[in-house]
Image (cartoon, rainbow, N blue to C red; front, side, top):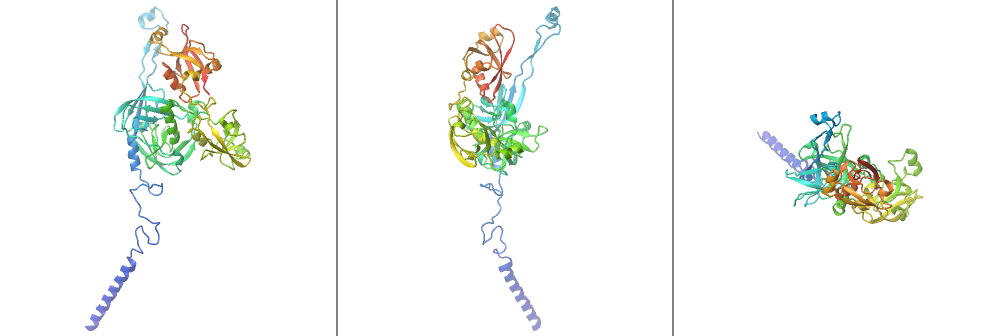
Length: 498
């Protein structure tokens, strides 16, 4: 019996010792910790609620989505179609008088409807969108996130950047603040917010997959590679028709781009979307609100870069060895000439921003106005140099370009009275009452005094204000249509601003 009791006592003591060892070593926090090592501070518990301020680790997009959704609006447009006339094939005879021939019958077509998105950028009602969303619209309606509907006024449009500014009469509106698009990085999480396919507010997520993309879409609209600005942020966030003009935001809910285009063989999303960088958007919208048009800074060079050079040129010009744009020509009396640039130089910086290719140069130039001062860094014969540059406008001076058709065209203009419109059988127009020698009209056309401009690029013109807006749209090539009093027929003249 004593022997059995001894065995039980030994077993009990053995179990007690085993439990103590397990407690102190096997289950010790020092050995098995959850997200913590006493010898290192590099391991932390994974967070599923806190956004990462430096862009690393898990990033919450919930706050950004909520903020952006309230400030992105649905834009609906309406464009009236000019009535068409159905003329009788029998001519103006007795048969026509009985059966409705002769001058024919006017057929009113229903208005053309359009849809897009926009972003509120101030609490007093300024909204930025794409030019192509509102271009040619007779009426623009803005539907807020809370479904409140307001009529919007188009403040200005710019085809070169594909941007437009609208204004609604309301206060205390939710709006988005601008982020710095120059600081965006490849792989950074972004949200695209808009009204695709006429759906309600839609948020999609993706990453920045490329920067400084030039896809040629703005060049095709303006017909001039020198004025068009393309340096898109490319993302894989889903964007479809109707998203145009909507917001591209970062994880902090800052506006870093305006969604503008998609790359697609079908017309719908196929994996890549393109946004106008916010630094361009901010500068262009400020110009539109302050001056009524975009103030463009010109350097005055013709260049070749790695994107446009062929393999032989890359090697010959040295663009395969350094990043930058190769200066092919320098315009006389230009800002570039004053800064000391010469053909053969390779521009590597504007201010403190690196220039690796043409789209980057265009993006940086789009952020300056005539009269702005900065530096240009370039390589000449293998040596880096820096020159001081003062940008000029397209006329060649450093003045702010006023939104003034009289000055741009080199002519005196006057609006027609209601009685004159009735006399000539037109709805409205702008008459040329004097042509200045050396002005654009005198140099480029055979237009005569008394000509009445009734349309430009097929858009009707009834006032000098409408004429100003179209001339300030960023396009370069214009077709002026109109009539001469007491002379039958419509006359057309081609005009190029730059």
